Image (cartoon, rainbow, N blue to C red; front, side, top):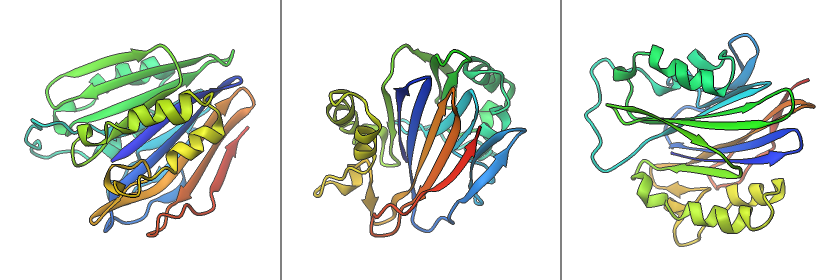
Length: 238
């Protein structure tokens, strides 16, 4: 479903997320305003989004796929509605805490990544995991960080994690190394790759969020059927 990575920048952070989706799914729209001051893409199928940001807070959603998946709840709600309900939160901790105010039992499993940036440029990273029964909160103390998921089962794409260590962490966690990672393909394992492709699904976009003391920028880059990343659409908030 997705690969999300976060690295530190001077006075803030940079987040990239590859969105992996069914080939038949309608294209997202960008930019779209969420809440009072947040921006992000809009998914016309689910009526929500998988990533949104405003100065000081970025939220990103991944599917949570494991072997013993629970049955889909009756009258389920699209997971894309989660971020719009939380993006006005005070900070990353508040966003995670507010999850409990939602109708959790109506969501299929997911992971929510919340990245905060305070007025000193300090970054905080929190994660919430919902498995259909319990909500678990995880605090990550250090960057860089990576999160991966796949509709084939999250364990199938586990090799993306050591690849991140090799390509990004060991290379100094630069934006250039992060970009190279999100464009990476194993020629003989396209279905497991960061820029993935299989008969029914592929990486359809890469979204970049840079949130620093200088301001917020979001770039949205569609990926075509051949796996070529097209020119980014930029939205900036200073």
